[in-house]
Image (cartoon, rainbow, N blue to C red):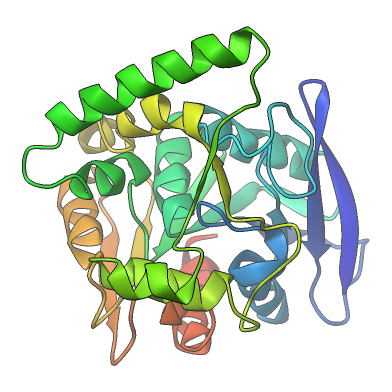
Length: 302
């Protein structure tokens, strides 16, 4: 069963969908999972797919649009703020804490792509999260920095200068500057140097998963916060919960999950490689293979 919900978040509301198991009985209590979508995504895409499948496995699950994105509130629009994204997760847990059919001692989080890094970061500071999993998980700051080459910082500094000039113009009434989140056209995708970017175009910008509320827009003023973000800075001290990392065997971002596995303080942690899968194929085409692992992990640890 699916129910559209509104989640209070410090003066705005997050738009979400609550998924409940078959034969749901609201007089009982269920473990719950917060599903965090990729950068540029919305709840109707891979996050909702995973939430639905986890509900089929017996969990209450929530997929939601990040603040400033999709159908959720928050101005300015199209802001990708890591600090806000991590805070969103705790607000969703606040919402779950007030549902009588949720077992508050058994709440986990699943993050997909950039949502993985956000889920890992949230687990370091919000210990209501009892288990955390990633599918194609990445630290968005690290990935963006890597896109600028071996020595990214001269480019980053130049980007910060450009953003500063743009914000000054915006403060004086100019329109907010936006960029494309993933390659917007097939020509741009063909020229992209990374497989995950080419795959992202096929997922987000074709009928495969295109959604009207995922507009492929990224507010340029997001770049300073994203490029300076480190989701894993204290993972070796604070990421203590059971941890499952799922990557595609052919994923070009798997190195990040490998590092997360090495750095996390979790006594119980595992990296699973899905044969034949890529970074983006795990969003939908190979999701069933990942869900099998996820369901077992969350049943064991929630």
